[in-house]
Each structure stands twice: as structure tokens, then as C-alpha cells.
Length: 263
Image 1 (tube, rainbow, N blue to C red):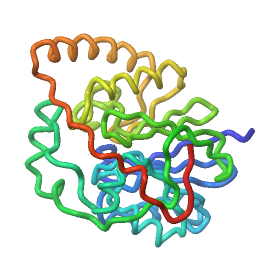
Image 2 (image 1 turned 30 degrees about the horizontal axis):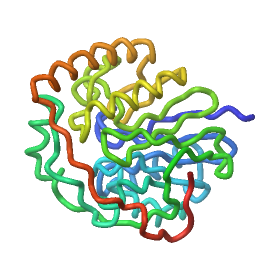
Image 3 (image 1 turned 120 degrees about the vertical axis):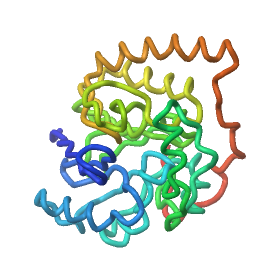
Image 4 (image 1 turned 45 degrees about the vertical axis):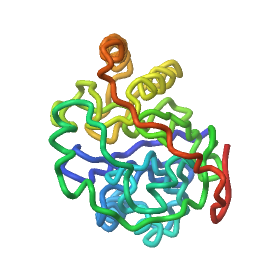
């Protein structure tokens, strides 16, 4: 087994929005940044000594514009197929996120007013449709894609066999990464309790590091303590009827994709 190296690829600011380059036997990209950031991402891939044409796969963690915004562009620039979960097919096929956004706090309420978060991006059809856990060995990485529903219905994370968890928006650094090392919710969740259940399930797998979409890597022990406190907070909000969740969308898994399905 070859060790997988996890390299952050900043898309906005130093840590505000991250994609990730996984280096194993072959390179794999996780997430596609905001619309129009494809060239910036491939330039950073090249700066790490990797030919972008060698990228074997692009994994999109979920259907928010800052994570799939340049997926179609990156597929053209690298030639890599896109793997994404079936439950977020709607945003991928339309280029539009599900709205309204459901803020997790003041940062989310502020960001929801940003017109750029409501603009469409270039749509795409996933080449590989994820339903369940999917091994990545065929793409050169000793690890797996794991569904983590809650942030969106089709959220996924990537866990390497070395214990690195590329977590998407399961959890973030406080204030979109401005306060480094402090666990927090990202600005939005479709279902906060379901997301927290996914986070705790991932922590039960004993990852060594959490690599997040917004901020620097998080310590799993600290994330676990935060999750326990967040569980209590969410239960209180739910008991008072103040916990908003998005109704489940119609099943999107029946439509065919271009290349294949996993899970």
C-alpha cells in the first residue's frame, strides 16, 4: 500500500474555500471550487509537480456552488471523469443549487445575500454515479468515497487508508476558516441533525486528520468534543421547533449516467 498525500488547493483566499489534491499511485482531485476557478486549480496542481492530464478522477463532495462550480471546466482541462453522488444530481444537471439556503448562523445569513451564491454555473453529468461506499484503488488511491448525507442529501467524504478524511462541508473552521483550528458549522446545512450523525459516524472510523472545505485541518478529538456539544444544542433547538430542514427531494437515482455507477 502506498501512502496517500493530501495537499490543499486554495480556491478563495488562503483557506476560505479549498479543493484537495490526493497523491497516491495516481493523482485524484477532490472538489472543483467556485465557477471560473478551474484554471487556478490546474495551475496549482502543476505547481506541485503533477501533470493535470495525469489526474485520474475528480470527486465532487456535494452540490453547492463553491464545491462543484468548476467541475465541467476541470473535466475539460484534465480529461478526468467526475464522480458524484446520485442524490445531488439536480444541482449538477442544472448548474443551480437547491434554494433557499438554510443558514446555520449569522455567517450563513450574511452569505445568503451574496448574489454570486445564487448564480448558475456550467452544469455537468457525472461520469460515475455514487450510491454507497466506493473504493478508489482503480484510480490510484488507497481509500474510499463514503456518503455523508445531511449538509446536502448527496454529500460525500473521502477517507484514505492512512486515516486522512477529506470531509467536504461535514464541518468547517469558524468563520469560513478565518479562525483556524476551531471546529464550527459551515454557513449552511440542509439537515443539521443528519449532518451531525454523518460527522459522528466518520469520527467513529478514527480518522487522523479532517481536511475541510473551509479552513485548515482539524484535530478529530477536538472535532468530537465540538460534535457532542453541537448535538445538545441541536436537540434543544429541535425541541423548541426552531430547527429548519429541507424536505427530501424526489428520488434522483433512477436516471442513467454516462459511464458507470458505484456502490
